[in-house]
Amino acid sequence: MTIEEAATALRSALVRRGIADKALIPELRLDTDLGLDSLAFVRLVMDLEEATGLAIPDALVATVETVGELLAVLTEIRVGA
Image 1: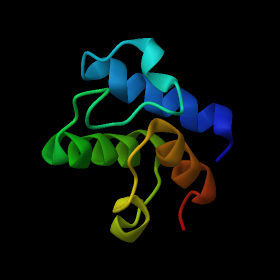
Image 2: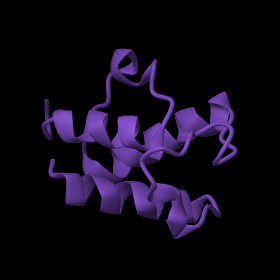
Image 3: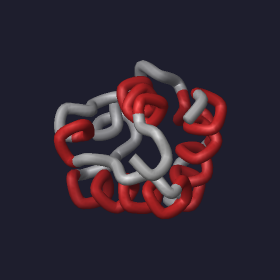
Image 4: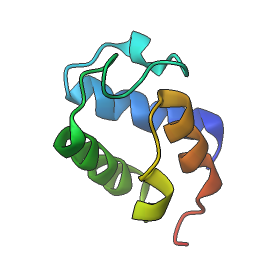
């Protein structure tokens, strides 16, 4: 997945959660800056899996703290992998 595809998918998922477009600043923290608690983060990952067709391993997102880190994970995964 390209960074552009990952950003589009993440932007859409965040907007559906009522989080503005400015949320794609890589340095923003998912918890303190965007207000996602652990359950909201899990739901976000599930939304991303559904929207992209990716299977996102828990081990890859377990340490994700920022928007940039989440985008990096998405770009590392291949569809159907």
